[in-house]
Image (cartoon, rainbow, N blue to C red; front, side, top):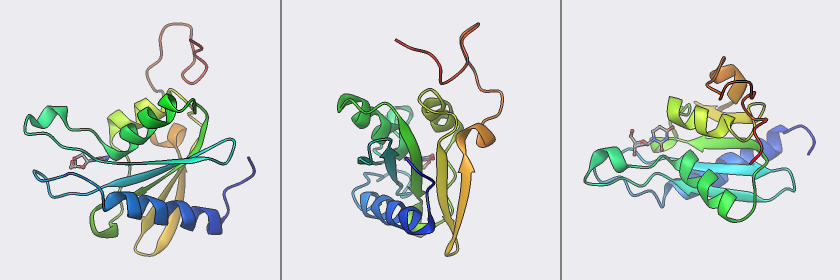
Length: 141
Ligand code: THU
C-alpha cells in the first residue's frame, strides 16, 4: 500500500461521513463515523452505537475494526474519522489503544474546518501499553 494522498484521504473521509449517518447516538447526540483502509485496498466502515447502559456504548473506530477482523482483515493502514456535523474528531484513548494493537504506524486522517490533517496512531499514543516483552503491534496470536 503506497502513501495516502489527498484524493484517497478525501475519499476515506467521505466514507466516514456517510457511515456517520448510520450512527445510533440517542444519548449523546454525537454521531461519529470511521472508515478503515486495509493493505489490500479494502475498506470497512463503522459508526458509534450507544446503549441505555451508557458504558456499553461502542465507538465508531472500534466497531469498524471489530467488523474488519470478522472479515479476516487485520492489517489496517489508515483510519478516517468524521465527527458530529463534520467536526474535528480525534480518536478517544480507548480507540487509540485498540487500533495500536493492529498497526501503531497506521495513518489517522481527520478533517479540521475543511483542512485534512494526518497523524499516526503511534504519534497520538506514545508509549502505549503492551504485554511484557512484546512490542505493541507485533503480537501474533
Ligand atoms: N465516540 C466515538 O465513536 N469515537 C471516538 O473516538 C470518541 C467518541 C462516540 C462515543 C459516544 O457514542 C459519542 O461519541 C460521545 O462520546
